[in-house]
Image (cartoon, rainbow, N blue to C red; front, side, top):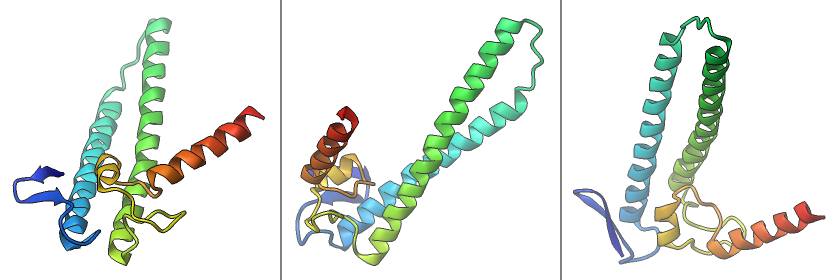
Length: 138
């Protein structure tokens, strides 16, 4: 497995799990993701600030307010995502990144590459979701 984040850093499963090269790969991936989210948030805020149109038609106004509410909910989800990204960066710094919070076993590099904020191995995540489903169905 060798995927490219940028020209000079690739993810490789060579060497010990979560070696310095892998940590740097995920640190850059997380920081890039965070900066993209922050850029999108700035653009949204600018658009909302510039959209102070006073629509005369009540349907247009309602539609505009609905669009605005949806956008703000999306930004709130992204704010929570940034907190998860920051937590993942802290785990890289303290050496716990890449290990399942439940079992202590390594999380597969493939899973981390797809979801770099993952805190559970795929098996632990599936168990967690099955338990949630059981409680929801009761």
